[in-house]
Length: 118
Image 1 (tube, rainbow, N blue to C red):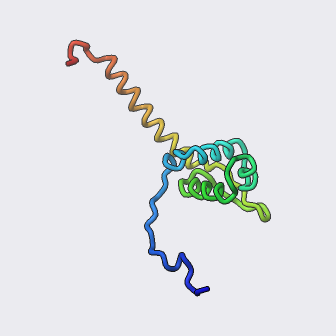
Image 2 (tube, helix red, strand yellow):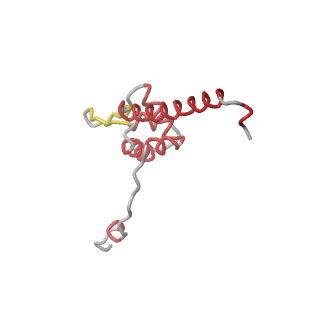
Image 3 (cartoon, rainbow, N blue to C red):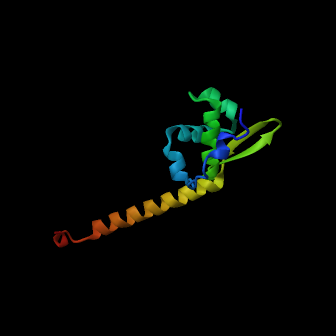
């Protein structure tokens, strides 16, 4: 066996930053996030509840952490994951902005003179 590892021979790849919307676009991550919003869980607990492997759950949790949607802390040898309130706050702020803009537009359209339409 040679001394070179596969990862040592691959070129560096620029990764992209994951935002909360992108992270939650995946149905499995959404389900993991939903379960964590009910109560904190370990990777093992989540893998037991879902039709995916522990390594897959770990990968999904890594994405959710990168998007600031979950936190992790150690309890002995276990890593326990919980939702991150600041990530949820950021999502809520964006949603409120969308909602506010939509309501403003509806109000503007309702107040518009129908004869001005083309």
